[in-house]
Image 1: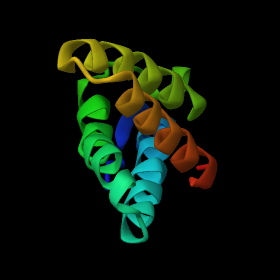
Image 2: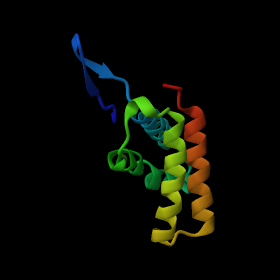
Image 3: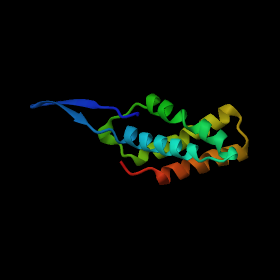
Length: 112
């Protein structure tokens, strides 16, 4: 689970703030894990590529949870994939497979 808690100070003490980015990432990560259980041989590589990247991307983000929405994670992750693909020299076919499975996981992930 990626869930983060942020504490803010108020007159009543500390309160915990919901993190929509971490919640969305966690839901997508769980969807990918579920997809891996029934994956075909062709889907194993893209799933194996995606699953460890979800928490990595969240850990590298610097944001204020009160200024983001859960949909922001999807956009950030697509941008991150562009850079990762260029660095990894991944074939167009593999890139398409990774993106298709990520989009499928996004559709399956419940809204936080």
